[in-house]
Amino acid sequence: MTTEPRDLMRQLAGWEAPEGTGVLSIYLDVRPTAAGVGNRPELRPGDVILKDRLHRIEKALLPRGPGLDSLRADMAKIEAALAESGPGAEGLAIFACAAGGLFEVVRSGTPFTSRVIFSRRPALFQLARLVDEYEPAVVAVADTNTLRLFTVHLGGMEEAGGKDERSAQFRKRAMGGWSQANFQRHVEKHREDFAKEAAHEISKLMESEKATRLVLAGDEVAIPLLRAALPRELTDRLAGDALRIHIRAPRDEVAADVAEVLAAAEARSSAAVADALVEEVLSDDLGVAGIADSREALKAGQGDTLVIAEHFEPIDVRNELTRLAIQTGARVEAVAGHEGLDALGGVGVLLRYRAWE
Image (cartoon, rainbow, N blue to C red; front, side):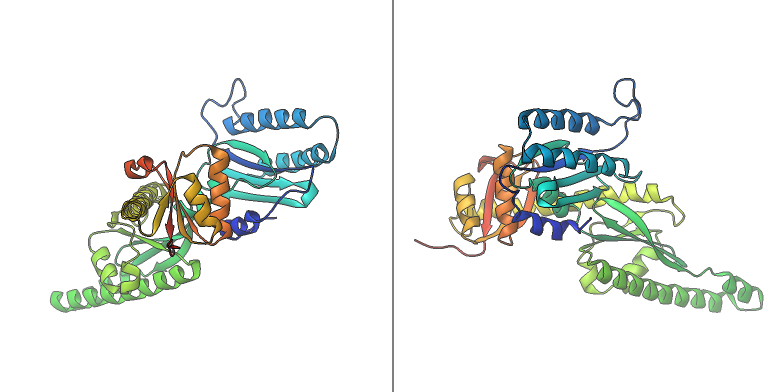
């Protein structure tokens, strides 16, 4: 069974394994490596970590009991899920507890940090980080006659249609006696009309995908026309400057350039949230910092956004605070390399309101 990651987070935040058992939270980097592992080129590093950790958990649960029975039932399903991870997946997350009827798989276009956690509650930080960093996006690659559309979901990019109106009819008419000036005006009118139609197609896809970011790419003639045709609500969602990409560029080439733009946009957004937290904490207003105050604010339902360093430790506290944030409807913002946040201990909460003493 698979569920949209954002919905899955909410479901798992309140989930607890039956007494005497536990839930496996598995995050894997499933990218194939050029050298493989040892003398087995097909073996991925994440597979080795998983096998070793499962063996250790199994050994710790001996002798037989409900926890061990549940684990062994899960292991068979996990093996099947790994075999079905598919060539496009670079990350795989699995949440499993046979005793509680739980088995959920999330396939990602970007790798996770390989980790296997066995506890009473699901470990959700890496899933929350994926949802935060890879919000749905739309990519539009255009020239003056052609539009290619792509969707970006969980780090993976797929082509999603477009429009193709070649200009052969204009060349034919020009040869039929049109003056150069009239022909040029007709071409310019066609380009403007096509840009408007393309903008409409982009708007529809943005709405259907609930996309929060838009990337434009194409040539130097089409991009200004297309940008001018977009409504303000979409230009506000542009992830950065337009990319210069040929309309027939391979999908993988487009994906690589787009990934850089989206990563830079997310880094700017995360830094801005961390800046806001530091400012609120230092002014003793709508922000608290540190584990204890962050935990208290989240439990009280005051939290708007949990702001947490990407490599915050201890890991169990990181997962606890993430779970509390999701349960109370707070966003989770994972931030990399922010000195101000690090100075506050690596974690804090932007508040919806403050309960003044």
